[in-house]
Length: 358
Length: 240
Image (cartoon, rainbow over all chains, first blue to last red):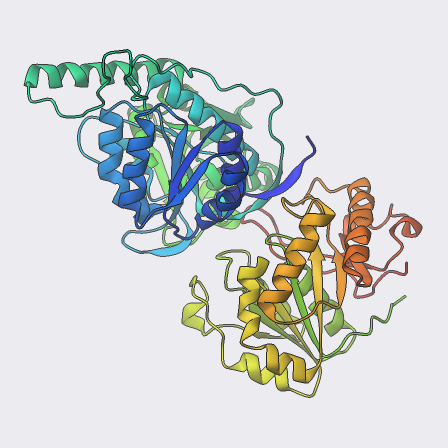
């Protein structure tokens, strides 16, 4: 298949079709409405269903229903819309349904603005909805990676019977890049015959529910989910290392679009003689804690910095990973202001001058 | 050497969503300004939230181009705002007015309300075509979209522009292949194929005989935040 130029939102829509998604429910919101626009044309072509709901609350509960049948189903939204979906996310996770959520993050809090941001890191990785649940959270930094991770998200959702969220900042949704779709892809983990509600003629009914009036059973259910999350931590860590071969003085941890801007800054810094490594988490949950610790815990590392399009969210996971062995600094902007390569160069240069950390 | 492209004083760039209308429109505006013309550029994009011509306002203004935008407080709104100056600009007698219209029939709907003034003043509506985009990778798809836009805009197309590219992955081969596809689209629409656009880096190795139409050299002005600004290139169209 020849390369096509696609906008992130369109590419995510096509990737979902490619992964075999048959149901898509959505309520439009900038900057992800193009997924809906695209799929309103494409879903009927592949015999799927695109239903525009009357709100994000409705869309996410349609997804709850569709997910209970074991079909590949998903929804997309942007920050305020995901807040509205949070109740359903908790329910869907409790019901162990293999669905996919995509959040193309815009500036918050509240209505915020339509420009790109990474302020939903906490919401995506640590909750949003109630109860002890986790989403697997995958963060692309290119349109091609958005394709690859969307396809992976469907496989992982089916493998673990747990929702997976693809978290892209607005830039990932809105920018255009050439993409290719992998050849000979086959959906994995498609046998849901043991639990899905597909019509009970000739067998015992399957019941998908989230209510456990017996506390012992509810505790047991939570244990079962926690065991899944331990498997995430063991088997599903994903990250990229950039410029980390030699003796880098500063370690940057950054994800998504922000990591690409950091790469531009790192190239310029190396021309100035300052060597900087970048660790880019791809799975935000499970967070690559050990990898960050290992990367920071080298003699030549003077400083560790988390650089984000937020007021400082992932930095808490970086601090937790580094566990006091090095001082962790933060740089970022919110509100839709994207830190520039020059700002990063200035910030990192000031860290490189600092004497060795704690 | 410059090629005279005789266009009327209102020039509208329309096309499939993501065909590169804005990049072509701003480069064309700069090209015309460098040739000494009075140029106004109207950002009429009511469908895209990012990568609109307003983002390169400073570069355009530095070239003496008047950029007509929604009021300052609404530059980052996803609202269909038409500034009052738009209609005034269309009715001006001097210079040229370039309208950068958002994608598809949805984006072109905005033209419906301005169609009468535009028709009175005389215009050229140009279809920007990228053969590497979904839905316009076939002649049939491109024709369907062109017709839908004409209906929504209540204006008729007068020419076709080739803008086939894959961003940084664009090669001269991709330009030739796209050029051929655009030629077929222009034939199917029975409209003249006016020119193609191509990044400066691709111009040296380009066989102009294979292209067969003039080339507008492009400087990428709508860049993602990790890309450094590029220098503006020469003003001339290359001879075909």
